[in-house]
Amino acid sequence: MQILPRLAILPAGAVLGFLLHWLTIRGIDTAEGRLPYCRGAYLAFSAQLLLFAWANHFLAGAGRPAAILIPLGMTCSFAGDFFNLQFPIVRSRFREPVFLGILCFAAAQILYISSFLSSIPFRELAEKGRLVPLLFVLLLAPALIFRLRVYKAGRPKSLMLGGFLYGFALGAMTAVALSAALARAGGWVLVAAGAVFFLLSDAVMGETTLHGMHPKYEYQIPWGTYLIAQGLILTGTAVVLG
Image 1 (cartoon, rainbow, N blue to C red):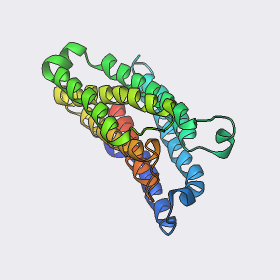
Image 2 (image 1 turned 135 degrees about the vertical axis):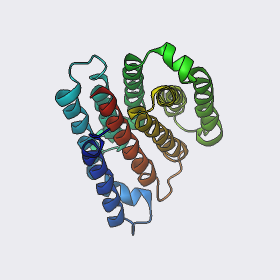
Image 3 (image 1 turned 90 degrees about the vertical axis):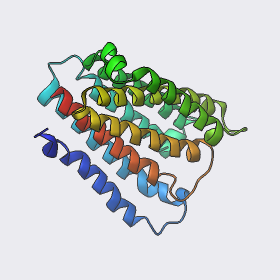
Image 4 (image 1 turned 180 degrees about the horizontal axis):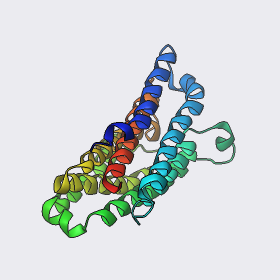
């Protein structure tokens, strides 16, 4: 864990940059008014994390099969960020860019899960990490959250179906990360914390963007927790795989 302070510098810088940017837009009272000021900055923060993921792969973990799955997952996440920010050029070409973002993030969760399971055996997770009960809870919880807080009749069917199915991928990733932390501790604790922040970020996004509500914080709270989530996952896996 001695390399942790150095590894955390770039993700921490992205989060700090986000907080400073948030201060510059605090006087804008609507999500719609804030979005044009956020798109470029938020994509830049995502690009920093993407650079961090690939740098870790080539500098430390390139020899391990599981290592490349992490930067590939972050690459899918970056694509998802691009679609979710709904740049005008994207909105002019795609009817529901957020649905494309959901597909990208589903792919990212699958890649993260694959990496975790390539690093720690499923049997160990089941025996020492309580994977089965965690999977039960974290596959059920997103479905309940979706039904109670996200679903809204009249919203685009693609968004509703995509959001519902994505919850299972996110829940499974969170369950595996928590199980790995229980089984082995170490860097997996960071990964598990990141997974929980990911769950929080997407829960807020589901309750706002997918549901069709647009509070003042529509982009800031999901993005702040999302950057923390990715930073923890990338740093934790760098510790584990490094």
